[in-house]
Figure 1 (cartoon, helix red, strand yellow):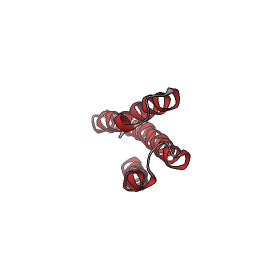
Figure 2 (cartoon, helix red, strand yellow; figure 1 turned 120 degrees about the horizontal axis):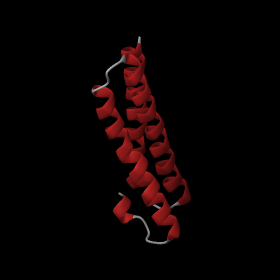
Figure 3 (cartoon, one colour; figure 1 turned 90 degrees about the vertical axis):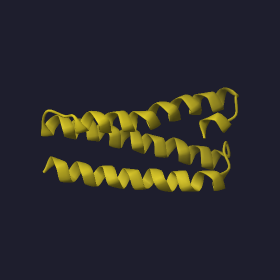
Length: 96
């Protein structure tokens, strides 16, 4: 997706932001799985959730600004919202 963004300044900023937060989700989930304590698990899952929300923001911004075609983004945005819901439930289940 990010490879198809414009190569102008706006496209480059969004590409960097989306790449950073989008890849951070998985890295923090991986770290949470190896957590030594419930507190560490919760902290990592909270970071993953925060990064997922930020990713969703950038995707919606791309759609609303017309930087990328809305029809191309709809499924990705839906998946990002589903991931946010999954992370919320996982955090609640594991922390209790």
